[in-house]
Image (cartoon, rainbow, N blue to C red):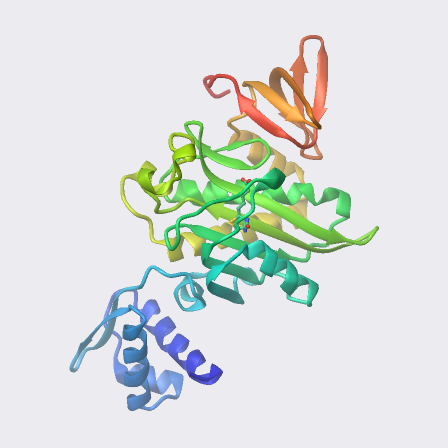
Length: 333
Ligand code: BTN
């Protein structure tokens, strides 16, 4: 299928999606889209072959009943309310790591907001050299290319922006997640999502940032490798029912764009406040591992650069990177 054919198929899908489950007439569709009735019919069948369920009733027209559980531009695009994020989606059935491809694309000149999404990652990467495992076709694993107007020293702020945005999208999907410093999304101490931020900068200017985001969406307990059982969770486990991945992805990109706009317009302070209000870490007794050292204390606050301040007796320690273990859950402040 050529690029133009693909575009018309997407136009037909958007038209159907805008019908919000109601019938739309084939005549209106061919008039508005400048396609013959035969071409509309061909695209309807093309969509059906991809797993879209579309009712066709004489004299009433077409009605979109169900979309396939996939994350191509066809599924996610019509649901997006963003200006830039996700307007170009590179979708892959399987890849080593979406962030590796996003970094290559960014280095080759990809634009701000381009997104790489994979149904399966064979070498997904987590923070601090760890692996990120994700069952094929059940979760959201994506990487967003950003070209922020930001001094390089401020890029760690973007990870906190992303964690606030993911937290909101997850809560909108009905799960009360919190943020574990610096950027894990947790529910009752079990990990739901993680963020890996990578960048290339010049001394004064960031060239690009790749935000790699992994969210456990529809995996069930038995899908996790044995070492993660009890430590990880998913939207499905928490909600007791599956979540539509395309809708969740569109919501996630929407919240991310909103919070990036806010960060751009107002700086880090609103992000710091939003992050603190959703934090699972502040007020907790924690064990911190940073720079090869481990110490314990009480997590007190996030400072204007996103670093965590921990009280250890009479001393206060500023932590810029590392791992946090919550020693016991306390009532939120
Ligand atoms: C962490 O919590 O350690 C970060 C996990 C980040 C995982 C995502 S999945 C999409 C993107 N591609 C990767 O290889 N990693 C990130």
